[in-house]
Length: 453
Image 1 (cartoon, one colour):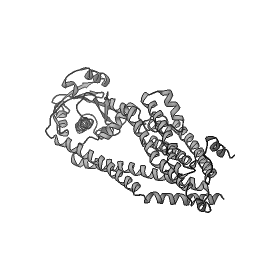
Image 2 (cartoon, rainbow, N blue to C red):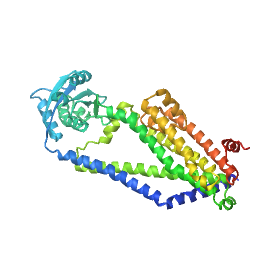
Image 3 (spheres, rainbow, N blue to C red):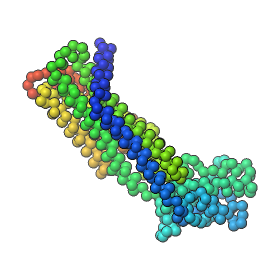
């Protein structure tokens, strides 16, 4: 019997998926939105690169303070001197009109940055720093850009890279030829932005990300949930239902339709995500071809978000957990949509099936969003552990690293258990009311059906 149920559910699932694919609206919306996402991201990056390259005339004036914590010596007329470093930076940074280099031995970078931040005027805004340290295998250069610096992160990084050949030459001739190969910049964090203005990133984390993730869940639930509710209700009130039940069990019918809506919505979301990634990769390649010194704003935004939240933000594990919670949330609300369609007993009541999914989704979305906007930790804690509000809150919280992986796994387990219960309830109601045509249903009667009475 179990294998028969599985086959029947699979047949309903495949049939329902095929029916969705035949709908022009589904295909058109999927393709059009995917193309718009891809082309939009690509165009924005290409236009940004073009606008940056159009500013060809070097106008930037900078000052680099070198905080030396090693035995390297910089002196006028020596092998390593400030004039050669300044010339190398001007050659490396096309936008640089002039730059001065000030070498300080045993200077504390934190104190120097604070002093630069305390100053006012254009000179203070153009000051950035290079820290030379001894590493495990040689020497390392760490670039630091205060928030007032008008130079971009990429330009500061290029200034640091321009110093490397000069330092290698000095180390090879004055210290140890074998150590010259170990003069490098750390590739993982070549430029550290100290005191960067993260107000936009903070606003994104606090307001926009919860709204975007919540809207995505809400509109996917509205689009697919209502479709599931209408299809279930329409088939229940169809004259062909008795014939259908001779081939497929009621549980197989409801489970197959819910799974079909769930899988097709996931496929659609994944197509849009892949389109966005494709647009970003293609746009980055085009931007680099237009301007080799193009600054990746998306990477800068991610760095700003990590500065506000933590280093785990936007990494692979939080992304997977966030998507898992989002998808489980969709399946949970699709099960509610199945319940809405199951309680319909007459054709004229089909419209009311949408209310069963519309109002709960809207209420839970608003509760979760208001808790996130108000940053009420008590409310957020409650919302993330309630399966019906978790998709609207925990999705964004896990993505930015605000919630630990362990808590995320607990939320996933809770949502999975609740989703299975809701699917079971939808099946019970559908089976009990599949051929019901009596008096108007009451909540008491529906509860009795679920309890098997």
